[in-house]
Length: 403
Image (cartoon, rainbow, N blue to C red; front, side):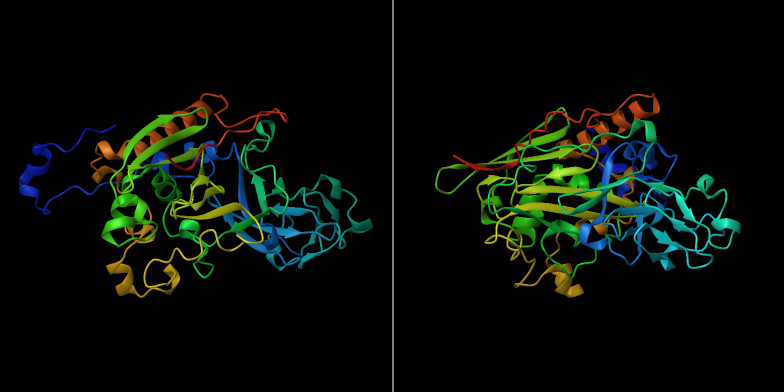
């Protein structure tokens, strides 16, 4: 972790901007395309790419980690995720027709299964005598929690889907609620799902408990809960699957609030209720890169009929308005996560940063990511990857606890 600012750093050339060297992003962390170190590391995991409800008989464009793909659900209910340009002559399958067995290209009618197998070539003699040799590039998918997950890595390294201790078992009357509304997962369903900054700006924010006291509790007023107004005492630590912090706050009644927050490699979080309600975190969040400069988020929560649509509803940013309803002036006067992160640019200028003691969690996340992608470069399997279908579920302790 970087040391706190020194007086020499602060006094350098009296702080004038003239002649300063422009800071640059850390490309090792920012670049997620095929063949990049971070891109290859991320491709060792299953990632949500859409809501299950988005996979229909109408082809849908999906962009993930710099790759453009086509998502659909065939007539037998199977989800397919294919390279968009038909292998015959390049027409986009976005204009294809979904049938019982797969998707048919509009140009010459080649029909592909969800696993890319070519079933028909109607313009060829005998319907395509060698069609079994044709294969449209594809990625395997599976559905869980109401999401479509895809694995985009090496076939011989395809892992099992991870299991989480607080999620896989539903009690009577419980179901999963999914949200792809972009920043924060606060049930602002009018917010765009595409967030115009890289995924790490959002993900590492989970390990920054101090901004909750400043940004969300005092600077912009109480955006979450008055219980977060006091400055916390924080302990961070590495776990077998990521990074965790315990933040302790003294309460006016003499009690204490212990807030436990967790991230799991490479891009998953379990965030407690931000209204400070007591109990375990209700779900999981994924921060999925669209490309080097944008991302989207997927949130899944366990809910009942009474709590459906209510877990984060009401966490408006100002005067009862959701973020998508705020004016530019209101966003300037009462900034939140979106303003704090997107204003850094589509990529932060890491070379201009001066990390301090309160940034320890952010530093730990970045160091762990770099260590794990180095494992992949060395031919090892990163943490969080398992090939055992009976592997123990990842234990999740995130929550708000009072004493």
